[in-house]
Image 1 (cartoon, rainbow, N blue to C red):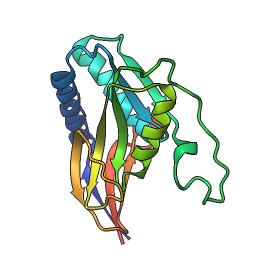
Image 2: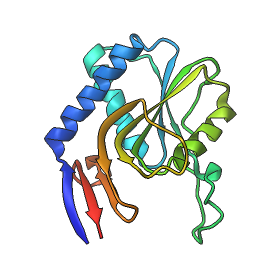
Image 3: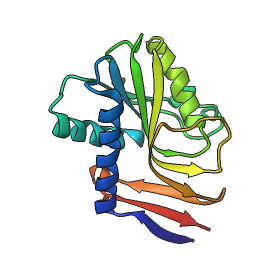
Image 4: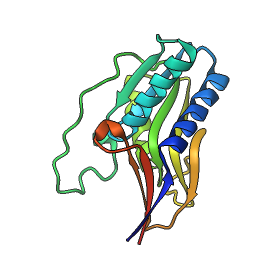
Length: 179
């Protein structure tokens, strides 16, 4: 296996700043907007986005949550590992809100579909947008695309994109692993 770095810490910081400025430009003061990080890996990105938006704008009272999609996945009964859901971290209704779903890597689109299903348990949003750090082009199983993209990469089916965060004991870096 070959691994190469596609985003180092400095590039990652610049990318996150750009994504935050795009959000601020498009959504303004975030009134009636909620940011929702997808468990498990999207929460590291969503927490960073939240911190940077607070730092840039000073706005602290926007809605933020974390969504566990474990039981909404179309493959959850196929594995041999027991699924343990994470703690519920959405304490508001999404009814009539603009939602920005946040995940680290967009690949087949199946996790996003599961998140959309899970989101409806909290109400009917006015609009749902998607923010991803890495968009793996040419690999969709479902017709899903991101509104905000940190970086688009061309990948083959057997390639993997691994995002590491200092928050989970590693360093901030994104790798492309090829066979």
